[in-house]
Image (tube, rainbow, N blue to C red; front, side):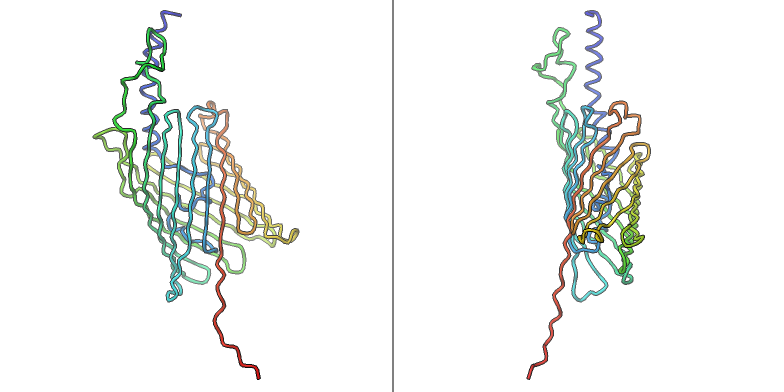
Length: 346
């Protein structure tokens, strides 16, 4: 009705002005990006995990698509590489080095986040099966926004919206960069006679609380992130393993607790190939139920998970959370045989 148009115009103006800043404030201050398959993105949670595995090299990638049923869907891509660094004269001492890349984009304003991280770890072998690790990490990131995709109230002409009308609403900045420091420790137990392996650690990020804001003359610090994580695989018999993963983290007022557990079945006896399949279920507290399928073949590890939204936001998402895919590849170096001199043959 015509007499409602001015009211609609005022409401639209208020909504379109507030929404971008509410979105920015929530994303900038609430939390870092996360994965349901956090155990398949180790450098995202703890730099001490660089090189903390049986093989010598690890290549990994992750993809997450979340909330596709709403206009502010998230897409996250990550990739990383880490390796062990051995020094010949240090028998019980080992180093790890790694690098990771992360890209995220969300919303009509194409709010994006690009981050590069470099990790360095030191591993002290306490015994043949136990290792204590410490690591540091530097992160360098930038967030950008494309406000041209937003619609503002001053684009109404004669009570009708005209997208060709320029808006006077201008953000002072459309890009913000930062550099931050993280650290972590980890304890690892790896049974040399079985597939049993357990990691327990403490990780952190943004210890220097870098400023990140799209507004001039206003510092918005990134809160320190601290997490506790325990991941493990216990061999039950020749064909079955029990796997469990737990992560709890805190960043400012944001809290996250997520756990997964499942069974891994090895088909070696049936196929003669190093093939295993794992099915797990889990839950992110007050947010989503998680179903995870993983396939292990030779040096490859493929994970596919789906989040079922259980939070109040499920009314907007119809219960659809996010699909996540991970792929890892491991390389084990073959040690050359020790040089020896054969006995001469007469």
